[in-house]
Length: 265
Image (tube, rainbow, N blue to C red; front, side, top):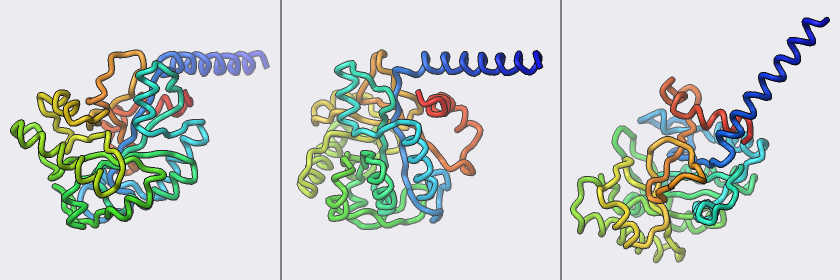
């Protein structure tokens, strides 16, 4: 009996120690999730697909752990004012595929907010094929208007170009023209930006500030720390993939994220 009691006490002590470590390490952190396709596999890179039922389970898990999703504007305000970011996070979607609509009712169920970064030419064309992906239907401007109660809209440029290879003139055009078109078509302010392919130009901050963007997200993995010097134009994100499409490298990259949400810090 004494041995059993000692084992129980030892286990409790170990779990408590782990929790204290995780709490102290991650209590002042948040995260931005990134998705591309909310759909069954349709061809191309499997890693970019998350099934609607998987997305539902992910959102439900976060909701039950006490997390709530806020807009990027709200997260930025919390960070700038040094307010608590405990258990708040952001959800983003890149490109603007029509199957984005599969996330709408799920997000609404939990009162979660999200941001979709729109590739303007693809939206205008109706269909688009990205590298290593099959052609897919894009969301329309009218469909976007109907989900603005949940979604902020951000720019993903006009032509989805590698911005690191563009001249200053073309770079400014990509950012300014996409913003102008989106604001006209949707009658809403466009404050947020996402780098196509995660390629960041050398003078990224200068041009983004000039075009009056508030934030920009990358494809760099990582949590957001409140008390560190944070560059709002180089925000990292977390890609929460289907387990079967996740490599060991993916798991290691997201290990901080998994620890944080497991212990609900």
